[in-house]
Length: 277
Ligand SMILES: C[S@@+](CC[C@H](N)C(=O)[O-])C[C@H]1O[C@@H](n2cnc3c(N)ncnc32)[C@H](O)[C@@H]1O
Image 1 (cartoon, rainbow, N blue to C red):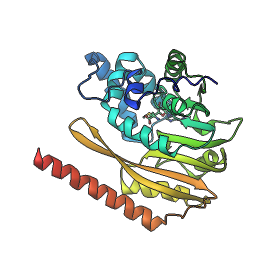
Image 2: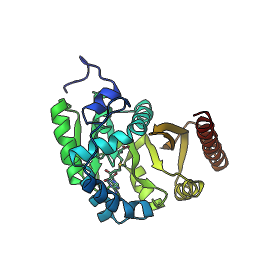
Image 3: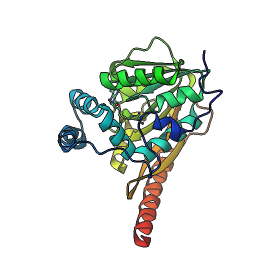
Image 4: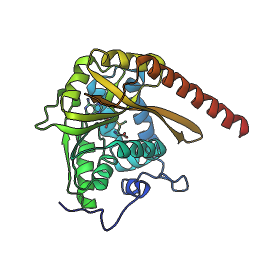
């Protein structure tokens, strides 16, 4: 296996730059054309309404995969991508890693680069995203990385994984128990699901906990990841879910309290910064 990274360690910011994603605010991506922005806004509507059809999700990410749009769109979320990548990297374990909803592979390839002994697989619904991810992996000389166009809800992996990653991918408040059970069944014993789902309200977080409840799993790590998003701040709940965990389980009450406290803290901090601005 070639370790493209051993001789030339690269920071996450520099790695993302290869994908046109600018973490530093002094580097900017060119604005897309107005007609592209209008089309993107149109395509984003079903996703923002909630419960989008798969075809709507694919249409949105296929359109966003065009290089200029992708660079601009992902650069707008660069700090969120950065904190997500840092959280996942510190949690990753083992040789076999799956990233569900990998998009153009900007983080998947980072995990592969940082874990040269691992074999990383990224899957996504969008063929254009996967094509772009594959092209970029070749360009960067990353050989411990594969990609496939696949729907995580219908995927049948031919192997089990030490770590499964889903960050703002397919897992959300509408993911049902059967789907979560399926994903967890792809883990090796002691494997972990590292998850940064879109659960922006307590109702969504509670729905996610309800779907997990019938399964014999434990949330062993729970964090809030905070990031800047232009002039605003954002936050994602981030967690590690294990089967057969030896680490102590966080109770539902503890998780809900952590969620509420985190949200309150985040809102107060945001308000404080606005008042000081
Ligand atoms: C917001 S992007 C997240 C990209 C990346 N994981 C990150 O953290 O920045 C969501 C990606 O998930 C993919 N996705 C959504 N549902 C999926 C599913 N059921 N199976 C595979 N990919 C899915 C979309 O196509 C899109 O590329």
